[in-house]
Amino acid sequence: MGLSAPHSSFLTRWFAALVMLLLLAVTAATAQKESVTVKGKTYEVATNRGMPVGFESDQIRVTNLSFGGSTQYSPEMAFVWLVTAEVRAKGKFTVTVTTPLDERISVRFDCKGPGGITQTFFDSSRYPTLWAWLEEPETTWIPFTFSFQEKDPRKNFEATQWVKFDSATKRQFRDIMKQARNVSNDRGARKPAGEAGPPPKKESADAAPAERIVFDFDGRQWSVGYEVDAGAQRITEFVLPGETVKNWKELVTTQVFPSAQDQKTAQEIVTGLQKVTVGRCPKAMWRIIQQSEDEALYEWQTTKCRGYDDQYEVAKIIRARGGLYRVAYANRKLPISDDLKHRWIGLIQKARVELPAPPA
Picture 1 (cartoon, helix red, strand yellow):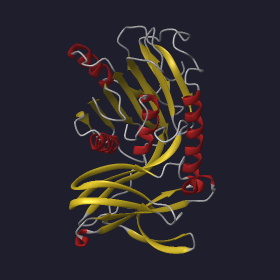
Picture 2 (picture 1 turned 90 degrees about the vertical axis):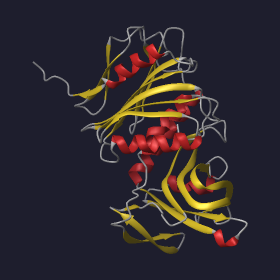
Picture 3 (picture 1 turned 120 degrees about the vertical axis):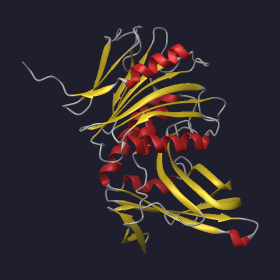
Picture 4 (picture 1 turned 135 degrees about the vertical axis):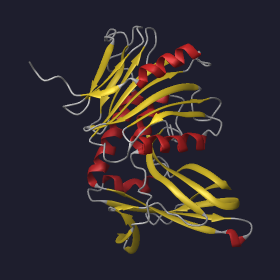
């Protein structure tokens, strides 16, 4: 949802939750200094619990620096970086992004302050040298410097933000990208809609061995249109008769992120998703219906926003003992009726994670 993506919400949803799991540890109050070497040069990096903290100054506060998948720059799936920040300085700025991974390369974009920015940059299809680290086995530290320039040079400033990826995280991303490329090439190859038959009234998706997410459908004949297990993420999509995951008007989705429950609370994930979505679509409707650290129910709608389908969605994120879970209902037949909207809010609200009953 936060990435610039094609008008197919499957690939957008595929990475949306994963991206938000990489939100920076932004609490700098207890930050420590750690010496990091990149391309032969040593830097002192502010960290909290071993992770880089978000850059903050009087001019700017960086709230997110992460990456995900997009087909905006290439017909095939590619990685792309995403930065979200709050610009506190006033002015019209040209921003130049650089990194010591390859000092010959830079990109530029314009922004205004004060205000929020959400910007993609350095996609892997056009800047492959900046993504060679993903194949390296060791932990990788990456700095990006954002240089803000205004007509009045006294307003110029810089922000350097670090990110860190260990070998396990990089392996998970490689696996997910491989799966996503397969999906974009032939999304209907596995369990096309209609072959699986309608699910029972209560559907469940296995998560950790001892947990499953349980929810109700609305009585219509939903069937599995696609499902895949990429290790770090499992996804199942349900469609109605006559529709497919390539061409749908209504869609139900479950996502499972095993062992991700300690990375972020449900409330933090939803807050991050809201910032990214509203940052890209300022006129989007976004409403948090209820939230806590372990559960968050929210709805949103976008219309006439570049990179986003015109659609309504209600979703719930649940943080349980074995992972993070997400279930959502999406509708592209706008305007959606109040009756249908309230029906699905009620159904999604009741979604829960359960332990299976012990054997008799």
